[in-house]
Length: 622
Image (tube, rainbow, N blue to C red; front, top):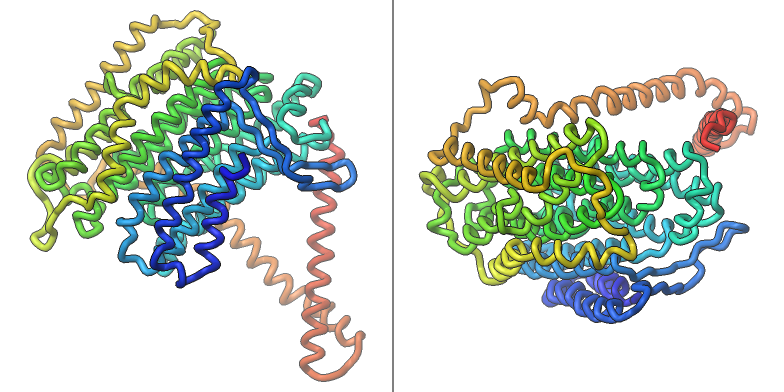
């Protein structure tokens, strides 16, 4: 079991430590590592299916031993972690193979594959850890690897900024996750999954709600959900294989995994479940609205990921066996979203790295394989029968209508609205890219991509067609030991047949409307535009909100501290430095710097201790 993580981790270490000596063959080692883990994962999957309890736990060594705080470096291989392992290594291997050709002319290709393998190793540790501390170690490893990959072309200001934005926004969620772990240990004395879950019933409702909300904050950061969704579309500044790996098989699925793994915590509090459902419904609508107004091929796909992960949050928030429905959609999404992103990379490869879909058109004649595979992914993501998205997303919509009160109409309606909008903006993307009159300049010569890029596209397209039906008929039963069954406890406000008809109806309506509007192309004018279009182009002003509410106050606070340091503290500092003694000017500068640092440390420490004391005195959680 430990080799699943060790193989890509060792490959990453070799590629990063050997340096240029691995340039000639390093990329092939980078492909071989996740492929080997995939073969091993299949073997372990077959062995797991033959076990009665469907769970294997392995303790490797004692990771932390500080008084009562003891944490093992342990792994857990059960039905939930097994399907994630196959997704990460299977789809990940195809993306690695595609990247060999895509990054052929990049001088840093060996370093790129080192980061790529590190990403896979961290994600595997995240899903295989048997306690929250191990999950958190993999969680932070994924955050580091994503920063390195998003800002891989760090000489480009946009890429460097996007990497920092992703890193900082994820730290917000990670802080919540860390505090949740602290609360678990403070109240239960453990972070082991089985021990935490078996004692959830002994905790107060307020404490369960607090732990769940903090876990949810971490999940929204990693999965790009409201209110921490703003970093995900900017992550498109990295190479396209990075976008495919983040959106299809690794980082953005981590939040869904965290909630699914913590299902006993979330199922213990109805307020907590409603919060998860509300965030999922709100985010899926936000992603759809913004996706309708974007013209960059990768950013349209990025906002579609925000929306599709919203469906998964909706599923895991509904409780019961609906957890399994969210995992089915996650797995199917891994196939068609990887195919769509790699297809976008193929389009960029044939169009001199252009990304504006308004300047494409008619590419179906020049890129037959890319057109066909992208088209299958398009039909899958909009939920057209009988493609995978229909079998994975429609049950979540139906489950939303099973809620007991008026929220069935609210959340079910949001899911249906999202289905229609998804069909609209994804059809707009497909039509403007591959159909209609050509709109590129004479210096561009579209051409099909090499076999190393098209073979993964074909394999992922096969998954986009067949995965939904196969997964929906097998995965829920497979996940029953971990996530329970979906029994449909509540009577739905609409019958399943009616919901299916409505889902297909809004899908056909959205796709047909987009086809009629954009089959002859679209104007490149940014203005004039309506209020909603302008807001969508500006990401519904989420970045503006973050700037004015968080960034600017932080800048003002920093400037105020610098002003106080220069005007108010220096007099005291200089006096203390003089009291220490004379000496050379260099020594006096060193003394002054030391005293200043010491004084500021005492001031900061006093503020932190005071804040902690006040928080402890409140004591409302306990």
